[in-house]
Image 1 (cartoon, rainbow, N blue to C red):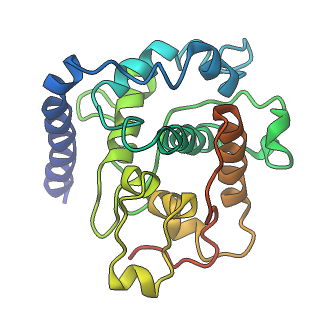
Image 2 (cartoon, rainbow, N blue to C red; image 1 turned 180 degrees about the horizontal axis):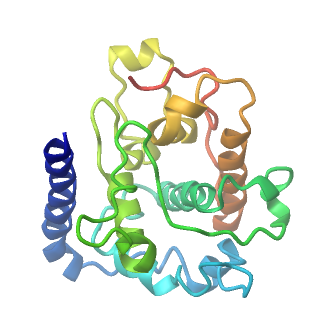
Length: 243
């Protein structure tokens, strides 16, 4: 059993390593997404990331985000200007929910940014296959201690399809092609489908789920900051989770 688990962990990290390597040459030619996300906009999105009360003060840096994005040249660089901005806003909204312990202080009115400082690890979590909880075979704290790797792993999840799930990236840029099973399960394109990909087993198909409302609240605020609309199908209340 232990040997099997170790083999699985090894496979996950080897896959991530190869993915980073495959992007490396293209990353050298890539100018990044700083034209979409300025330092000022980044700081407006994460208002409390450098507050003295934040346990991860000074961890989530603009430079780490921009540097990590260079390993994924299609992130925020595919489609129209609206599609690119909307994708980045959606990504940052999802990690905001995951890094605030559920965002409970923001749930009532996320546009007011109440004092919630618990940014405790940039994580996009899939409950069936959780590579972002597998933080290293030899260094289990590598993601929580390394801002660049934290952003890289979150972006790897965002950009990578894990069958039968599409990638979050393809959903947000309009390249999602639903299968017959997707149509039957009402898995329609939009931000709600991204939530389904990330944590649908626990959050989707549930009326008025507070966690889904958190995610939507962050997205609505960030879309406003990016000056774009959110698009339709924001929740996953009527979607069946991926099996």
